[in-house]
Length: 175
Picture 1 (cartoon, helix red, strand yellow):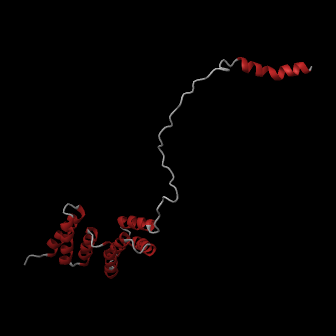
Picture 2 (cartoon, rainbow, N blue to C red):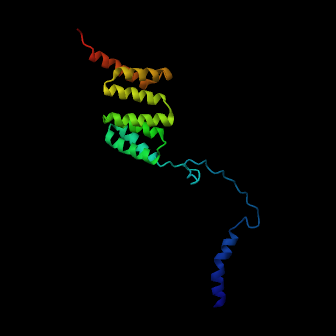
Picture 3 (spheres, rainbow, N blue to C red):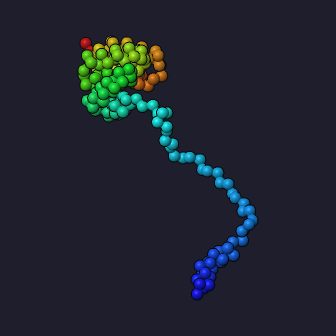
């Protein structure tokens, strides 16, 4: 009886070894090159640069572009509180103040942006737009022309000058 049990236990093993033709022979191995990565790789935490004002600045810009100036103002204010040396956040804050007609605060924000980043083309253009919103068309033209001298092909500045010129035509009346 024990022979029968041993035969039943070792039988399948014997069949498996008998079916293996390469026992003892070298089997060629095909090396498959890995496919190039197509997904993003997670960065090492030391390589990632996070700035505290990034998210509020992004949201402020998004709401400003959507025309929701009150929310934009709130997010830009948060951005300048978290990163007071971020000129882009100050420019955004000034633009949102312009659109909510808080020109005194806009002037302060523009001064801070100029202090941090200088009188850039963007600041000059935004100041021109601010003056145009206030109705000070002469000051607006001066700022737009100053910005245009720096970047003559800038479509935003050219568009703003077009708006300013159309404002002159509307205001001027025949005697």
